[in-house]
Figure 1 (cartoon, rainbow, N blue to C red):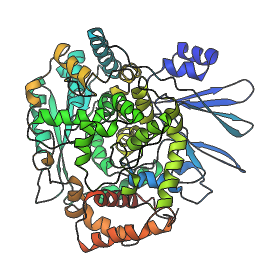
Figure 2 (cartoon, rainbow, N blue to C red):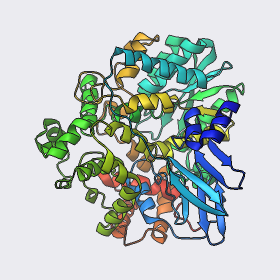
Figure 3 (spheres, helix red, strand yellow):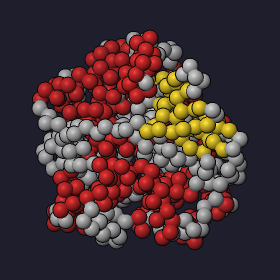
Figure 4 (cartoon, rainbow, N blue to C red):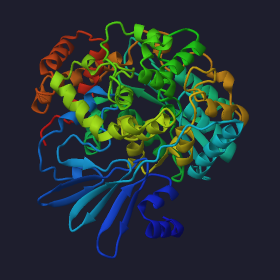
Length: 573
């Protein structure tokens, strides 16, 4: 910390100090009276675990360092990891009762050997009246965010075929020159029948790298023969940080390759955070399959619209079911159950929308948690009560159509952005001595997008998804738009029936490994029958052992169960 930032912390407190600093850090203030305060950066990129009981208080950077004297698993936290994409408990929770994590905008004060938690009140931003001036302001913020995180000694981009990583690459070339930039991507195989599953992605990454004249390293990742051995080697890291996704294995391969070929002073960039921040995560061309990609992009905008301020207004005035977009997308879920909207309560309507977004496997307004058969009726109630009270209650009571987007982005930090897929990028890079950078988590960019209006690519307007980002690429940097045509990344871009999850579970080297682990039924040791429908789970496992390919929600439930079991969460400590 520089002297000016330290002065602000001492004179004005933790809150003001956090606003002056970017990055992933702890802030610790020791006072003359012997007390101290601890907080993390305002996005919670750094983790702080704590446990307090009659024997004292322990703070730690990973859960393996805590005594965990209470040997009981936290059932709602397990429910979230099994039922929601990310495979990890939300920010303040861990898998263990008594062991907690410091939440977003929380300060832990240690005094007399005891912990006292206070909240820093979140101040949501209202949607702004954005003009062309704001497009240039966004471009300036993005370029600055990448400039300050970059290195004159070299920069590496984890390159996919999408807009986010290629945008970072374009900005780095503009700022540092092609000679100071390189990229890495993976060529991934899960089975003989499908071969390379991301050929479209690697072909486009090669074309983009050639356009800029930079070096591209392609790491071959063959999960037909490898995977389980690497997973077992990384299991301690996964357990220490509650990681429940095999995506960590791919990230580890990337980090190891970068470290082996690095000069030691490079910055490493990833494009995570961008999807959620720009378009609430609906930016993957997956809402409605169609050969015309422009329509697929617009269908993503339709999905984003259903969680925006206009549709919230329709929920609140009772006209939501008349909405043609809602009718169209809901008709595509003919077998799903839906909750009835709250009666007469604006906070209740907002809670329904927030809960549908953050606490469901399928993000669709009023999609009922009863569709997740892995939970019992009592289990669903206990899960929602715990998570809605802890994370969503204040937002539901205070959010308005003007501040809804700001609340979404703030809450994202407690959910998907602290999940397994994002955290694994930091952990695997750090394990190799690398510095991982995610410029879309920059404070100025987050503030800009928190106030960005619905008409800027988030609703039914004709602006594209990620509108300010694509404007920047068109007007402020050199970008090969002609290379963004055609299939996006994976086989399912041209074969809508193709399932990447099924490839992992049924045809990769993980298949016999997962079957062997699930045969022990260790999940029964920790999953309470009051919360989880163990007969339903046993049925899925039984069919998996027999080789029957499960579908739909059960396939997602099986993937979560396999990953978490393999990571070791269900083993006795």
